[in-house]
Image 1 (cartoon, rainbow, N blue to C red):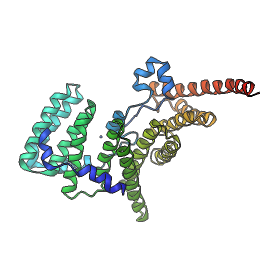
Image 2 (cartoon, rainbow, N blue to C red):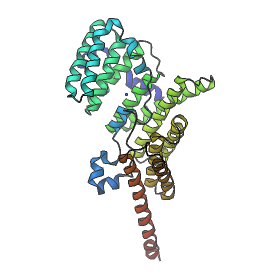
Image 3 (cartoon, rainbow, N blue to C red):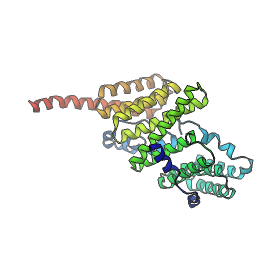
Image 4 (cartoon, helix red, strand yellow):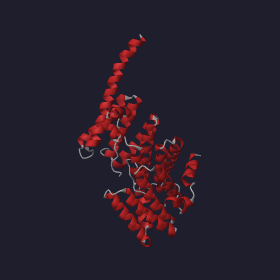
Length: 337
């Protein structure tokens, strides 16, 4: 039932709403142990409150950062007949790379969208709307991004894209993350569940057919991305047992795709440490934290100074909490006696 409910949410906006207004991976900042530390340290609080907000996950698609059909089909959709649209998009992208104000790039994208609407090419419309939606995320304009992403999905599905296509899943993940950031818990969980189940089924189907191709690797990476993002949300709403399960599965996918000596794997180890620390399982938390630090120190090129700093901050926090716990035990015993 949740599939139908969520897909209805994604495609229910009308085509006329498009006229209202007319994927960073690489390194994601790890979770730092937990909100107590951010309260204690203004430096960490300033640094995304010790863990990345949902916005950074939306823009980067978390750790795994796949390149699926949304990006791969862009050039196919922007053929010679749409060279003017392609030129506008490239100019806008260059502005963003140079650090110019996002409004300038937005104006170019809106011009490109206007041309696409006049030509009534829904696939091109979807591509430009996707750019506008992601641009809205960079400025935290979630109320603008959400309807744009909805329209992207509507146009993709209307032009024959399957509801299980990776492009649909990636955009659905972004919508689920938007709902999470806005505190719309039911929609967020429904979206995450739909994404994880659908993507998992895609991977299983490819495994049954022995399709160990680039498409399979991308599908597996997308599943890792979804599990990682969902795990972070569950940790944020204090559903830590589930958060640990999803993050642990994401870790196994990261090790399979990228290996043990990769920043994505180390970040997930650190995330598991943070979750276990929040649960009060300090010995296990220490084990995960030490594993991440050991690999980072033995392989200096893997993690930069800021990433290592957060790993060590986690470790320090766990030691502090262990000390508090050990100190409280005799106090509790004396009270009980």
